[in-house]
Length: 287
Image (cartoon, rainbow, N blue to C red; front, top):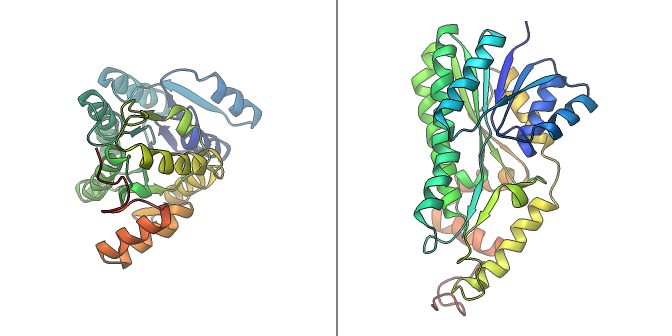
């Protein structure tokens, strides 16, 4: 019997690539989507990848329960959970609103916890399962204007490390994929910008004008997210897989560097790499 896989945020980007690869590889894939599943199903049919869509909004506890119940009813259980749903908030700490901060964590962190909480009893009863959290290299380092997103991914890494110790006794493996920047719809569909931060009157306008185009270009012109899907498949199929798997140029470069350099040296490397302003730089301290 093929393993059943539930993937959140499977409509596009990394989630879609993962859903299609696993479906083509013989897994029974349940693709969690909030809406607009037609594009995903068209791609699945074109690739001969049979999958089932499930209505799932990680911010809605009732929909989470219903989605997990649907998968269990149809597949008899859930062998693999891929927590992929997420978005990024572009905002300074000074500008970020309560609603923005809460939504960032509600989707990226609390949503992940809601789905995982609902799936765990089924995995525990089966005495086995794999949970893979799609994280980011920004869960191991900081970048300006993405503090809220950074913090949410640091939280995902903390959840991964702690949950492994809770559920390992039940034969459940927990891993994270530290994704770099890939060519996805993240800037268009997965990035929310605070209007004060991006305003021409913002005291951070020089930083925004320099940094945002660099990140946007890296994503819009970046490589296919297929390596993320392949990493997920490899983790599922290799019981000895690393706990956290860096994937992509930025992750494969910065994550090992973060481990090897002292904090101040690493920060200086980030400043130099991205051309960021430092204390005393023109405009850096002006309001």
